[in-house]
Image 1 (cartoon, rainbow, N blue to C red):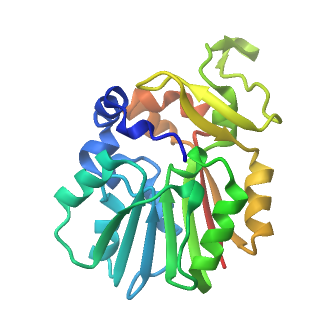
Image 2 (cartoon, rainbow, N blue to C red):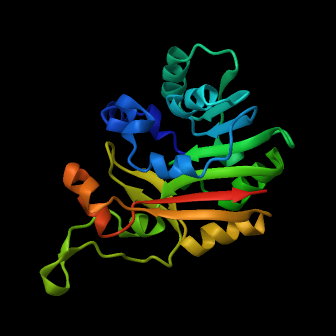
Length: 242
């Protein structure tokens, strides 16, 4: 089973202070770009992997989805999602993405935001997603960018011309990464950009679009917490088709 860090009281208390968890999708700076990758939702059967508080599930229904299945390992997340959702067409279940089992051809769209980097066996996961999608179905997801993950928790260094840079270490060494974020020893899994995309292709997906999220200078000026994203992309956004 994957590490269930979101049910750690210390972690969860810190996580709920994030802007994106307070106000939802509009609090995520990458959301406009990720939203642009989505297929039309009218009548779509949707699976939301790592559904968290259910922000996307509710948005999908408001934008025409016929049904949404939200899966998450965290009981804390699911309890909050259930509390905030009053829609019989949205179902939440507890599930471990490391052991994902979707009914064959049950979904038109599989969506995930910032969950797949917690999964140890990515090829197994994307194979399960591929089986769960109808032919022509879409997979749209975001993860921590592999370059961001390889940087780890390190100090800024002085770069050329006095510019402060964020160096990348051991990018080619894939596998476990531990970081201290709201709690000690949060477990994630680093894969290179090539491995991520090739695993999708190997499962039978066609890559439709990728985006390496970084804020505009205007966005970074308005939100100083985004300043480091100008030096290395923080998120990788991917759209693929079965």
